[in-house]
Picture 1 (tube, rainbow, N blue to C red):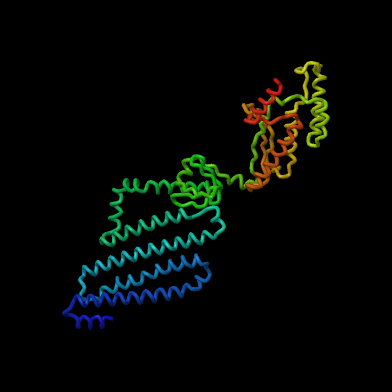
Picture 2: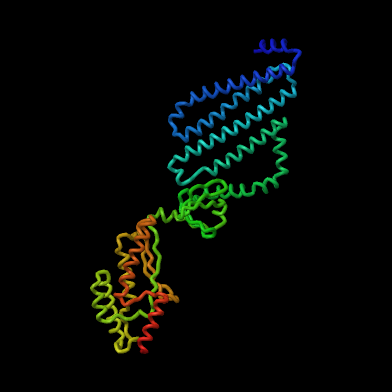
Length: 415
């Protein structure tokens, strides 16, 4: 090689620029050949690895290896520039620095491709369904490119990287202002990951921004939520720390979903049961024992205090609302699609303008939305239908048709 360069130098000693041009052209050709050989040999070496990967994984692996092979032609320029005799030391130093800067850039791009490949491999793991590492990958890339930028600038300026790092201390306030969102997102991401607040696939609800759906992706700056209307909401990740977030994961893992709904009973329909009502309702299997025991208890109480049956307020009696409440309790207690290991309760709430709320509180044995709604609807279909047998009415605000019918009845009466 040195003999060839010496022969070329002797032949073109009177034409230094032509000698430099031919030398650079030779380096360019050598770089092309080295790049081709490196890509071919390394590609062959990893051919078996590509066969074990799927199409997307193999594409990312090839991208990583192709970036790595780009170092070879740059090194040809970095070390071959010294073999051009007529080139000035300053120009050779510039080529050295630019080549070394390219090497740093290529290494950074290769490591970035490697991080993407790691993220893709992790995506196929079972635990990736619950916790993604995309945010950590993005943080690593930021650190990687920051270090690479400092090294590239230091090499191009032919200065020590420590000098640049010392100068960054004076710019700390500016950097904090510029990267404020990134730093806040980084802290929020660490808190979310360490406390396991939110996972991919979790059903979350953020009422302040109208988000209600499942988490599709957690990144460094944002979290993507696929709402139940198939829209996508992109939320700054720090919102999960600063705003109230309801996570339904606990409900999904428990195996039961809560039913909490009230029947609003018209209070004017509440009354004592007559003997005929008691005899008729005693035929109901669910409350037969309740009526027997309650009737006996009331009879003993009235006998103990010598209650006067002619005075309504002096005598204890069965009420239609109390008997209906007992019926509902027995109904949900024996319902086959309600969770037997979770709380079941029927209670009266404070009366409101819409009537007396009778709240049913229980848990379905499923967390699947469609099945849950079907169970809840079946329960209330039955309760609304059975209420008239107890002499109770559901409160309903009068409609225009009700008012017209009432006016028509008044007109008939007057006529």
